[in-house]
Image (cartoon, rainbow, N blue to C red; front, side, top):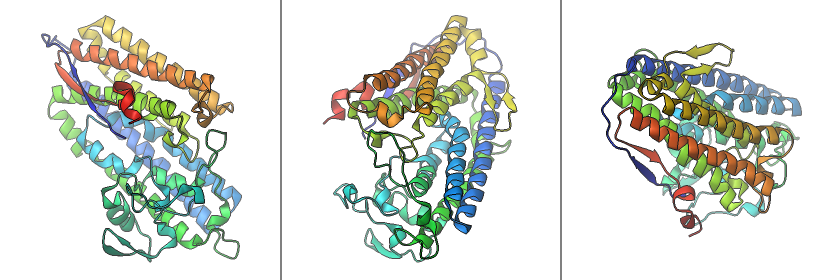
Length: 417
């Protein structure tokens, strides 16, 4: 899907005397470190649940692995506000949270899914079923499915972004399977016997499917270990951030504005409403999209308020961007805090409705006015808070920031071309 970069031009203002920017950046880095460490802890719990599933496949062990995956999304989604403004995160993020994916690359799919296309020759490669295959003219030995195979040879194969072989969503597909319910309620319904290692095995290649799941989970852990280390006192992400205070503040605002506007309001939410397409769900196999949207929004708020609640209930907090903006212009800060809170109310209503049985799939259905209203109320709140973020940029004396855009917001007609 085409994306655009929207340059937000703001008039230069005399930079006011502001609170300690270094302390604000330190809080920001502390929250990043805590968020990635929490994501790692939850990924390690997921690994334990996956190992239990593979050692003793059953309805209970599959359900436990799914629960562990769902829990792992809570801290990770809150780190997404660190994208866009921090190059080290952007260069890495595609390995862990890329979507949407052509799941036929990984495993069996329903006959209605189709096969190779002009856009993706490997859309139905089915690595699980094939221990050897040709990829971009190269013979690949996949007799053993390893993290290196997934990362170095399969992920974004043939330079196609939909060839997602690693990360949360590859694991999600292996745990749930395809969601074939369209805009009706219901997630994927993979059976536990897809991992059985005896005559109970369904859909073939249960041992290799388990190898893939194990490799993808191990790779997720190593990726999160690496990123958590980048935010420690001597980590590259923290030291780069702290090396230029003004650039660091710009990174904070860029991440907030880009996630709020182009990524979440546009690509993840409005686009799905425009296309009435459940394939545009962020967590489409598990029907967990309502939670991913909610915790993305919370992550933006965490950055501005300088506060993050860890998975153990402890709080990481300190001097905040909110305090910095308030010192420059109290009215701008008050409006932005109010807008962030309103966004969380709107995202919370989507979350509550989904948990009460009105699934995000159903909200996307053509003609479902109640669903469209829920989603678009949150989209509008996200757009409104982005405008307040722009005013915060101006209040801090910054002259221009490029926020991620989306055709769905900036050029809707292009979506249907």
